[in-house]
Image 1 (cartoon, rainbow, N blue to C red):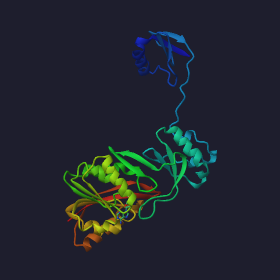
Image 2: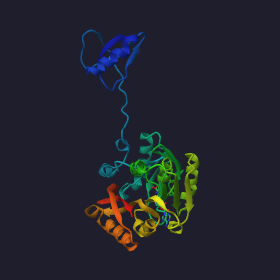
Image 3: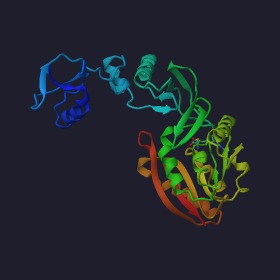
Length: 330
Ligand code: SAM
């Protein structure tokens, strides 16, 4: 193939020029010969010495595990295009037909994503009070504890013992932007602290409650890991502290059951304070039923409510969304 031959000292300048003019041939390794560098080109250019040289092709790195995984042709369309990455672990949702190929899928993920050390399949839906799921080990390390980096904080957690979703990172940053300096916050369902630890950078004090002892153990560890002192972990049912705390802001990140705790939240927020209420709903009625419930509970407690913002947070299942409603209570 054709090549431009230049002195080594001019190589970088020439490379840029060839690139800008679209002459540099992509996908080949540049050659060095003594004091010369040889660039592969797609057509001759004036002003340079042109020679004929054999170049080695640069092996193409696959972008997705789907390009290299070995599964029967008729199942390829079922391979998920994405999966969750939590720290250095991957969690993928596989349809039943692909489970017999779980090890090959896991190995392919490990090969493409060098920083992933263990791959697991979702073995059940998130369920129970602790909102955890079963996991099936597919490939790599069997370890389930990891450190996840998100929004500038580090969160240590065990994916088999606590709830955690990296898909909420943007939502947590949205709340961070809403928080004012000096606020007292109640994180009713805190988990390992992805909201509390982040918001602690702005708030005065955060009460972070969770009923899962593993979540609170990691929350305490995450306080240390992030050198955060203004978060108070509380282990147990949040109902034992609601009413005793008066917060400027309350986070209700328990979408499946948050509606059952609305009264507890409303009696724990200061007048003019804000509640971030999360729920699940069908795309045909994203906010209606949740809003009605909020209004009803507030009315029963003799409170006024002003809806501030309503948003889809993320898709949750076909035609289902995780939603958030921000409202002020007076
Ligand atoms: N906010 C965390 C996050 O974003 O990762 C965790 C959210 S997870 C959906 C809900 C959490 O609520 C779980 O960690 C669960 O253990 C906790 N939980 C469930 N019922 C509770 C209750 N009655 N009181 C306190 N925590 C509870």
